[in-house]
Image (tube, rainbow, N blue to C red; front, side, top):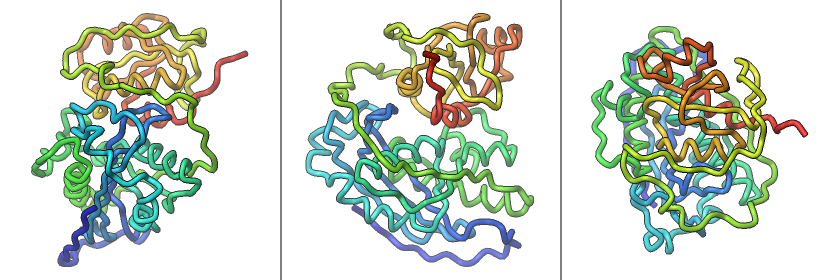
Length: 325
């Protein structure tokens, strides 16, 4: 575990009184995206009300299972074998979240993983609001080519040293969040805050997946992976403002901030059908660039297929409606 403290000069920017008094910029690396996946490392940068760094903290976590896509996060079973269990660091983690807004890139994912770990530990994280930097960049109208952390970092001139390492990703996000926060304050932008609802109980699946590394492609271009048939009938198109429903056919197009196969796995675990192409039967298209000319986005416009971005899709995955019967 690592901690450091820095002191910064106060900013002269007039400050909205409704803004939070402190933030916890968080990044977690995990064994995957499903409900039984585990946190394997976590980092927190604590920031004051104006986004100045107060301190930072980092820890490895023994997931008590296969580490997942090692080629992404670089953490092997040997490295994690001697790390503390989540329950051993839950108190220290909580101290750094206490009374602050949780800030993360695709925050719904980090929040869900944290909430599940605390539920397993029969506890609750002391955080009640989260802020997604993807949503904030949209509120600010930043001219980003996509919603990856590296694009946000490049926009603000922040240098990434070790992508997919929790401590460096949290540092990068903290450095990119401060100018975003200052721009929001200067422009009178309302921060996109969302409620964090902790889990009150948890039951793990009886047989957590083992040996997952072999199931993921290790490069950007990959053949389609054959998946078992979705057990639920297609209930039709997604209706904006309503919940996703098990059996809905979801297609993806373009870059995503979360590894595509991991995102698809999470959708499958929620009971959705992954469509490799787009047709009139497709329930929803997920893309961070709806104005692109890809075949899927063009067909979505032709067929009137609903379109959401990755961040909105992550929110929808948190509450998928069970199939009928």
